[in-house]
Image (tube, rainbow, N blue to C red; front, side, top):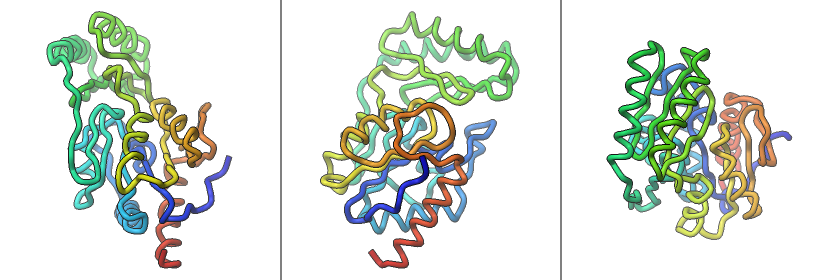
Length: 249
């Protein structure tokens, strides 16, 4: 499964995960940095596809805005729980704040007892990173599952050296489908690139729509194409931007 041919800009809508897709995953989530080459490529591609480019991520919308500034894109955050459309309208379903606080309190206690664990608190979810303490993976997962069992409305999802509690309704595939009903995405062929198990819902949605799905990295996947590394996908994106500039489409 190689990377796909360059899609036609006027017919394509791009949906891109962030961590592990546009930037390398690092020990601390706040330490990632978007390169200027990647930022320039995103700006170029977005212009050629008439704005039909969105970030679909587990991060908060505001966090992504800070990383991609001065650019500003439609974004689905917290795995699709929050969504900002192309005209700036933000959708965020109501969530029981007491349940979320219960989750955070239990995980803060675990982090206070185990140096190196990192708690990432977001609007609507909480992620526990154990990259600095990989030997605590089982403990982190068991603790998260135990707390979530007592907090209805959430589910546990696992990622690369992270376990997360997120709303049951948070789904990247549903977010992509919602974007595709709106201008400027409407009527285009969707392309989605992502690196983790939380991206599989989006791969399924894009495949069902006859689109292009790209898995970044190894692992079983429903995606039709694959980039072996983040660097390989970013290189493809940069080359695609240069191709679009060259043909003036």
